[in-house]
Amino acid sequence: MSWIDIGHIDDIPLRGARLVKTPVGCVAIFRTAEAEVFAASNACPHKAGPLSEGIVHGQKVTCPLHNWVFDLNTGEAQGADEGRIATFPVRLEGERILLDGVAVGKRSAA
Image (cartoon, rainbow, N blue to C red; front, side, top):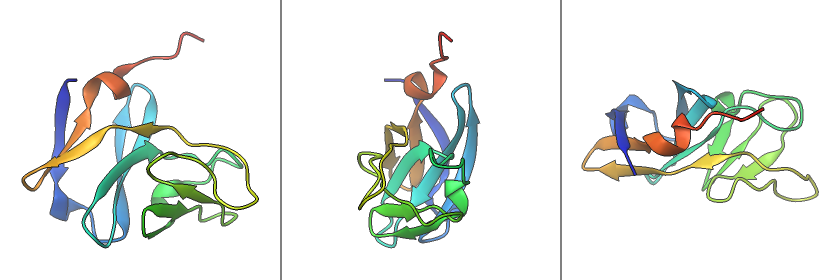
């Protein structure tokens, strides 16, 4: 993997998110209350709601438009909702957030 330093952990508030523009679209970087980080597509598959503006709770995010909930580990919709958001490898190295450059550099063949 080729890791890209995208910022300091404190650049993202607890239970918040920030956007990173990539060749695969906008990727939301989420920070949980426990200071864990996750990376996922910013668009809800239901109506393209901006997930970075949603509510982060535990290791999940709730879409701000229609309250769909997604697991940030798997991207799977929770409860009765069906769908999935793309997730991307991300890690903390000290207090720096690193995003997998290979995963977010892939372009669609379509």
